[in-house]
Length: 207
Image (spheres, rainbow, N blue to C red):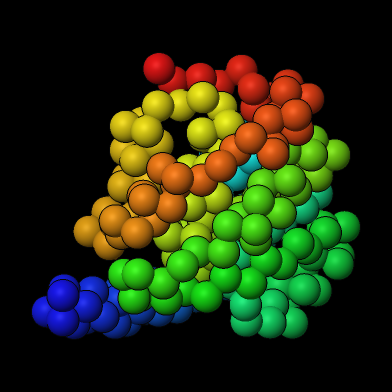
């Protein structure tokens, strides 16, 4: 257990180092493109479409703002407890985007409880089509975002194998058994009446 935690922490540090370097390069490239009169559209880390009008990603950098504008977002669900950066707040304000923050600690411990009520409240925002187009993000777009999307898939009647496959696609080597266990046991009964009213989401079903 201890060796696994150390390995995960080392992977996190390496990813942070490489990610920071990549973000610096992208930021410089975007600045050069703007100076040259070109618009560079760079999606955030781990960006993907979940459904029509629902997207997921890691934390958006300033170099991603031009890309996010093309999505014409109405809302962003932010799943970290840390305050939203001022430059991101300014971007939201200037583009009429509403921020929903659900602070979930990004613990690496294997048996830390994921707050079910918080995930449920986030899903209520996702299921309200008036909030679409909508982006769900945490820091890396892996664990916290993966849990929200995984629970959404259960509402869409995906089988657990498909739910876990999607989660593992984004989490890769950092997939957590605790996250998958949480999704397996998550009770969707109190949200079913909301999912049936969300026509854009209820059509997606994986047997």
